[in-house]
Image (cartoon, rainbow, N blue to C red; front, side, top):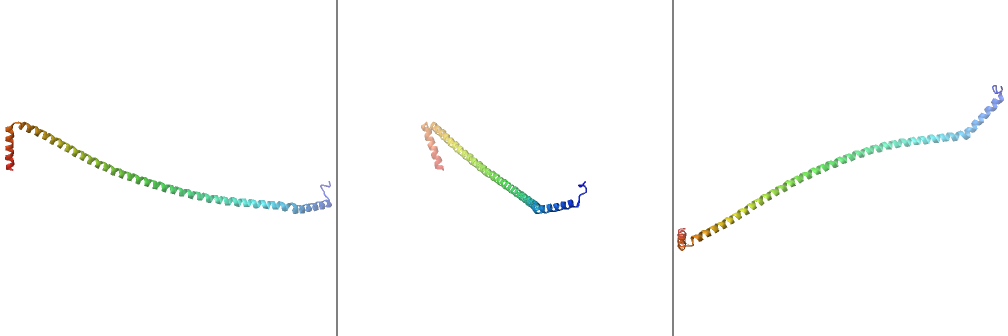
Length: 164
């Protein structure tokens, strides 16, 4: 029954033991515990600050990356545009050059045809003149076989010469 109804002495010594315990705990345990808690709080704050800085850096890098991508796309579009322009100019120049060369070839062919035609006409004329001389020679031989025919021809030619 003493435990249920404690005496004054017990309460007094229990209170003194409790106060001594509190003083000892405050002096030796609470300061290190509170210091560790404070250090932990500071490290958590630093980690949160570092995380916020990392988040801001990531946002900045993402924005920078998007800017770089946009610039790269613009450069790519510019290069493609220049390449297309260059291709078109090369094609147009090649077409013009082909037309000029085609015209030159056609003109050369016409000149060659004309030269061949002239050469063929000259050859035909040579052959005609050769044949005409041959025919005339044969005709004259047949006519001049006879001496009387020769004298008549010479007399006839002399008349023509004297008249002119």
